[in-house]
Amino acid sequence: MAGGNKIAGVVLAGGRSSRMGKNKAFLEYKGMPLLDYMIRILEAAGLQDIYVSGDIEGYRCIPDSRPYNGPAHAICDVMKSLQEYDGALFVPIDMPFLTPDMLCVLLDQKHGAYFQDHALPAFIRQPCNNKSASSVRWLLQELDIPAFPLPEEFRPCMGNFNTPEEWREALRA
Image 1 (cartoon, rainbow, N blue to C red):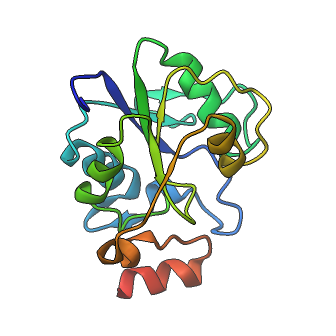
Image 2: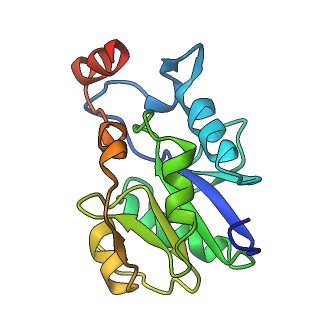
């Protein structure tokens, strides 16, 4: 709950992981599948209802209406499915350095928020009626969600990965 509102946590995990060569959700990180690790980050930020955007067996999923059509479309699908919630905090599957503290900074913003120069993670409030966004940044702008300055101490947390080489580098960090 953020400010007494009903807020869901969502891990964006519906991509093809084509550059990685295998599903990022099942890469091992700190002794568990990366998807489980990302769910734990959302739980540590105080969110109780956690969903996975995509279709991964064994998880509470919201499948994409148009699979592999990008995260902006996936976010719109999720928000449509979660209309009983006041909003949702979205994290990508490939950002394991996010911290609960930085996610709480976003959750504390009453109109939703994302960090300046980084479209994800993003806290999006209902209603989310956009169905034509081609990018997350454009969706956030269309919804008038404010960009929050990224505190300096959170800059190292914003890394993500898309290839086996980038993943090996992330594991060394």
